[in-house]
Structures are given as structure tokens and as C-alpha cells.
Length: 449
View 1 (cartoon, rainbow, N blue to C red):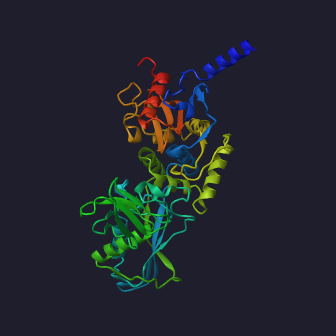
View 2 (view 1 turned 60 degrees about the vertical axis):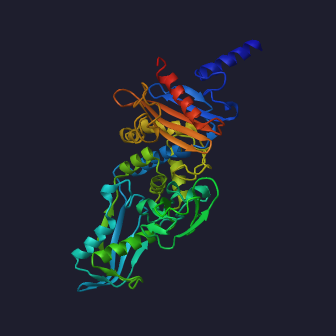
View 3 (view 1 turned 90 degrees about the horizontal axis):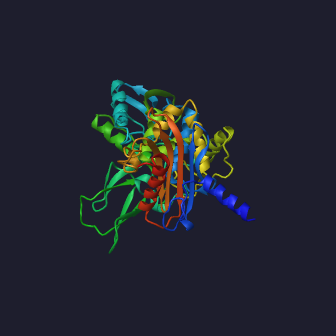
């Protein structure tokens, strides 16, 4: 029995060579923390570290690595969202007797602050009307939205919804689905029809905002009720209303009047203007570096644009199962990872990243991950070490969750290892978890440092 116990202990040491007495990360309270780590050598296919890699944990924004892998696999790198604008009715001289109709496709980048070169949607519509010699539109601006189950998920925390990172995906998205509000004056820029600001003075604590799903009432809690210049960015429940108000204003400034009631719902349509988004690959690179939740939800839904979110997730799971990856013990609710209800294992994420690294899409996909010490959310991670720029990771963090997933690269920029570190329910300061992850990677890849 003693020999068997010794052999078992030795096997455990070999399976996790970097484990230490206080846990593989060595953080305070690790005995009560869920940790899943999977680091694999892509050349040999062997695990360098396999520590609780089958444990299903909350991945937070590491979910985006799976979402982009799915979207890139289904749609390719060069696809684009195309939002078509049409005229519905008939033209009589400089008067158009009908409506302006926008056929939305859930493009999350429309007029986004993150793609400034693609902005000017309203100006382009105004210019197209001027070219046709139209000075009056008797009908209304009609935005047709076909996205099923739009808006924030019920699984998202209500405390997240009002903030820009909690902006939901709608059939029509505009300006990152955010506006700037000035609570002490009631001013909103750009205009957001229907949005009501309710300021509540508090005696202590920091500023906070709350808005329920689909609610038009924004609750602002602050000690600062006098500063008229104080403003903050918030999400909106009706991006189409923001667009309609802005387009009406732009048309008026261009000398084109437009009505407010649709007058030709059954009339034939003629094309006016088509807006094309950046390439899917550009969108996915942007969302991975900045960890953009809205863009991630848009890319998830792009795999099944005419179906529900549930259908898109089903297709996602079927895709990876068809590639020989076990999806039985995964729970996916969104594309961004904002919900704490997602469950993925380090091994599952590692398998997805391994498959992508060996696919024809590898040269595109692996560039989505920000380089440590240089870009995005890992700009300060492993900075000024020998690994700076040689590892690229997507991070994920919510309350008591810190996760990493990505690749180690060789000098030629080719991925050599898959890296997944998932930490849930930690009790120490988050800084200590980050430091532990850095030390682990230095021990594995730069032991001489």
C-alpha cells in the first residue's frame, strides 16, 4: 500500500510539475478557490500543465475568445454587416411622398466611436437625398429591426445594464448604444427620446447609476448635485430612437424636412444608400483588444442572424462538437461573458484555441489576442519581462473571477503553446492573482529570469 501511495504522489507531481505546497498559484485562500489551468505544447500535443482542466468555471470575458473563433469559422474574415436604406413611396419634383426606411442587420459598429473612419451614416443619407433633389419627405424615418430577443440578457446583472459595458445588442445599434447624460441639468447628448433621468442625492459613497432592462428611467445616485458640467456615458434602451432624432436634425440642417408618421407602408421601395461595416476580422480584433461586450454579442448573433440567441449558441456548440471537442459540460448564455452564469473548462477553451492554431484561419485568429506588456487589457501584464510581446492573452474579470486565455509565440510569430488560466472565487486581492499568473508563466516559459 505504501508503494502504491508513493507512485500515486509521484504521478501527481509529474502531471503538475509547477505546483507548490500552498497550491499551484500560491495565493492566499487557494484551498477554497477554484483554479483550472491548461497549458499545452502545440508541437507535441502534450500538456505542460493540466491542473483541474476539466473543472467548469466562469470564464468572464475569456468567452470572447470562443465567440470570435466561432464567428471567424462560420463567417470568415472578410464578411461585413450591410445596412440598407431605401425610399418607400413616390417622388414628385423635390417632394418625396413616402418614408425613409432603414433595414437593420444588428451591426454593432454603426457610428461607433471605435471605428471613426466608418462614421457619417446620417450625413451619407442626407447626401443621397440631396443627390436625388429631394427637399421634403412627407412620411417618417422607419427603422425595421428583425433581431429576435434583442437587448440585455436576463442573466446579466442589473447593476451592469446602465453602464456602457452593459449596453445590449438590438436590431439597430447606434453610437455604441450609449449617450452622455448631464444629471444636474437633464441634458442628453445626442438626444435620447424617452430617456428619463432621476437624480438621487446620497450622503456617502461614490456615483452610481441603475437602469432596468428595457426601462427608460435612469436612476443616478450621487453626492454631486450642483456641478452642471458633470457628465457620464450611459447605455440606452432604444438606439433607434437616438438615430431617428439625430437623422431628423441632420436632414433639417441640410434643408430637408421629414415628417413623423409613416405614410406609405405598402409602397414599393427603391435603394437609397447602403452602409457597410468594417471587415469581420477588424471587428473581432477590436473587441478582443478592448474587450467590447456589444461587439461580441453582435458577432455571436452573426452566426445565425435570422434566429434567436439560443439558436446561435446551439450552432456554436454544434460547430465545436463536430470538430471533436467535448461540449457536454459547457454552459453558454452570451457571446461576451458578461453573465456569471457561463461555465467553460480550461480544457475546452484550450481545445478551441488548439484547433484554431492548426487551422487555415490561424494567422488571422491568433492576431486577435492582445500582446502582453503592449496592448489592451494586458498592457501592464508581464510588462518589462522577457515575455513581453511573446505571449498574447484575452483577459476576463468580474467579481472574484480572473481569467486568461491565449498563446505563447516563437520569434517568427507562430503560436507554440496554448495558455488557459481560470480562477474563480478568490479571497485575496485581485492584484495577487495577476501576480501569481505572471509568476506561473515566467516559471514555465522563462525560468532563468
